[in-house]
Amino acid sequence: MNATRVRSAGWVLLAAAPAMMLAGCAGGSAGEGGGETPAGGGGEPIELTLAHSYNEDQPQHRCGAQVIADEVAAADVGLSIEIFPASQLGGDADRIASVASGDIDLDIQGASALGAVYEPISVLDAAYVFEGPEHLAAFMASEESQTVIDGFAEAAGVQTLGAWSAGARHFTANVPITEPADLEGLRIRFPGSPQFLMNAEALGASATEVAYEELYLALQQGTVDGQENPITNIKAQNLAEVQDYLSLSAHQLNTNLIIAGPVWNELSAEQQDALTAAVESAVGQVTDCVAEDEAATLEEWKSAGEWEIVEDVDVDAFREMALDHLAGAYTGDSLAVFEAIRATAP
Image 1 (cartoon, one colour):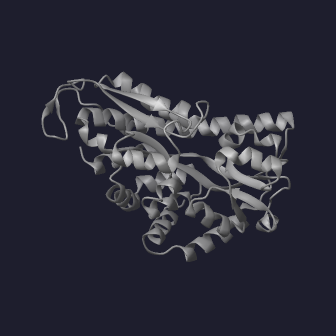
Image 2 (image 1 turned 30 degrees about the vertical axis):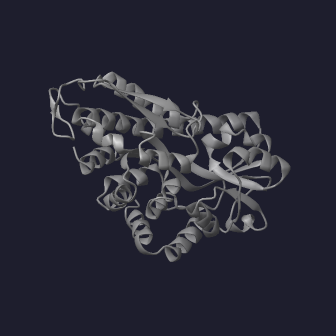
Image 3 (image 1 turned 180 degrees about the horizontal axis):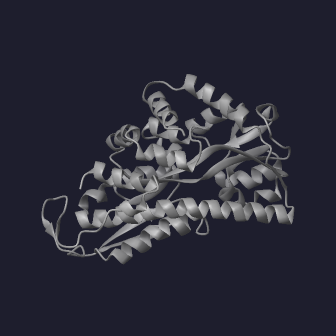
């Protein structure tokens, strides 16, 4: 089973065609080494490690990692998965290296973090490059996505099994942010990756780098005036306790990729099929879980009056400003990825 087969199957599900999920082989199948592998995997069972940085109550774990582990176990192909959430096996940058070296088998990573290995893939985290989760699905289902996925595989030696949106990112601050001018004079916390810092510039924000684990304290002490994150992260960090306004700017999709290291080539074709099918199922479930969790959280915040939810954000002004800036800032392969994504916009 080659890499193109895996990617194509995954992107079909992203394009809302779950009926085309790959089926596990019914009988014996040839492994990557060319030998016959009996149904059920044969030989000693293989346990894979799956790492990520999310809490166990977040959709990326509940509806993503756990679904992958459960469905692989149910496939009964001599494969099991042990999950290590909440950065137990290291931060994003450390885990990328560990996946490439084979110390971690599977990982859930943000696109911008993977840009440290292959810069063009970070464009999937560009401000307003996607119109929404459906646009991400359309791009991943398109031929244009193959260039960036193949480039990443060649550069990192890492296989991409699927991708999902973990929700749009929004601004919080002690003042409402309804248009680009409202960011003037505010110190806004952004992650320190080049793509996030480019997003800050594109949106007209003054970026301050603060570790995610230190964000609550930085806001509480006034080290920064505001920040941006998906609703699931904002809730997990209890930021309503230290900020007055949530402004629904939806300025970036939080794109996660599910990646596999060298162990991929050690699996039989049947085991690869089972793992791919499990990832496909998780992709659809995470998207639904994120939408449900966000709606419930927003309703809870509105009912409790914990802070003010600002819905009348001039998203068009932000989008136009950001896309114009990024179109002039990217070059080479990154520009090609940006243009390919925009060409698939609805």
